[in-house]
Length: 202
Ligand code: VGL
Ligand code: ZN
Image: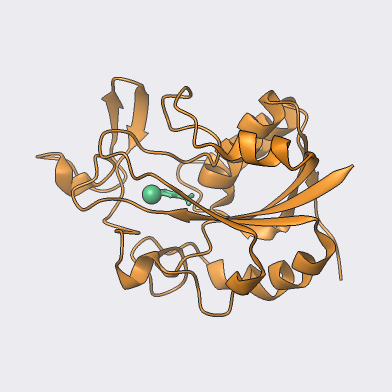
C-alpha cells in the first residue's frame, strides 16, 4: 500500500515571529524532514491567500482577529493577515526540506472562501485536486503533520478519512493554535472519524 506524507502549512507566518504564529511551530521541522525519505510521496501544502482575502479580519468592517462570523458556507474564524501570495510570510520555513516534495499544493487562493483542508475548501464541496493526485498515484495511506493541528491538519484529516484514506496524524509533529478549546475538540473529532492519532517518543 503506497504511503504519502502530507505536510500542512509549515510556513513562516505560522512559526514564531510570523503573523499567525503557532506556539513552537518550528519545533516540528527536524522531525518532519526525517520522515520524508520513508514516504512514497511527499506533499507540502501552502496556505496562499490573495490580498484582502475574506478570512482576514481587516476585510470585515468592525471585526477583529479571532471573531467568528457567518459566511454562506458556515462559521468562519477571522484571522490576522497571513500567508499573502508572494509575501515572505507565505514562504516555507527555510529549515523545511522543501526540495524533498513531489507536489506543492496551494490552497486558500479563492478570495471568497477559506480553505483549511488540503482536499476541499471550507464550503466542503470545492475540491483542491489533491484526492485525484493521490489516487492516480495509487496512494491509500496518509500521514499528516504540520500546522495547525486544530485547523488545517484537523480539517485535512477529517476530509481524508471521509474519502476513505487510511489516515494517521503524528500529533508530536503538529502544533496547535488552541482557540477556545479547539485543540481538544479537534482530537475528539479526529478520533470519532477513525483518524489514528500517534505520538512517537524518540
Ligand atoms: C491555518 C488559520 C488560517 C492553518 C491557515 O494552517 O491551520 N489556520 N489559515
Ligand atoms: Zn489561512
